[in-house]
Amino acid sequence: MERTYVMIKPDGVQRNLVGEIISRFEKKGLKIVALKMLQISRELADRHYGEHKGKPFFEPLVQYITSGPVVAMVLEGKDAVTTVRDMMGPTNPLKAAPGTIRGTFGMDIGRNVVHGSDAPESAAREIALFFAPEEIIEYNKNVDTWLYE
Ligand code: IDP
Figure: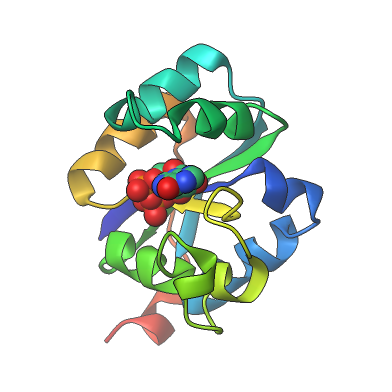
C-alpha cells in the first residue's frame, strides 16, 4: 500500500468543502491514516513549495497557502499518489474534467482547493514535513476485504 500527502487549501476550508472533499476520498476507498487542521507558517510554506522559489507565482502562492487554516491528511491505498492526483484533476481547475475535485469546485489556478503529492518521493518528503511519525496511525479496517481482491 502507498501513502500520499493531501491538503485542503485555505479556499477549500473557507468555502466549506472540507467534508465534501474528505468524503470523496473515503468513498473511493482511501484510508485516512493521519488528519489535522493547521495554519501554515511562512517557513513551512517555503519548505513545502521550495521547488517553485523564484517563479513569478511563488510569492502569491505563499500568501495564499498561509492565508487561513488548511486541513492536512495522509491517505493510504493502492497507488494512492496517482489515485489522488486523478481525483483532483490538473493544476488549472478550468482544464480539469468536471467530475474531478478541481474541475467541480475551482475556477482559478491560484485557488485550486486541494493539494496532493505528485510522486511517491514527494509524498514521503511532504508527509515528514507535516506529520510526526506518532501522528500517523496504522490500523486495519474490516472493509479492506471488500475493497481489494
Ligand atoms: P500541483 O499543485 O497540481 O502539483 P504545482 O505545479 O506543483 O501544481 O504548483 C503548486 C501550486 O502552485 C498549484 O497547486 C497552484 O496553487 C500554484 N500554481 C502553480 N502554477 C501557478 C500559476 O501559474 N499561477 C498561480 N499559481 C500557480
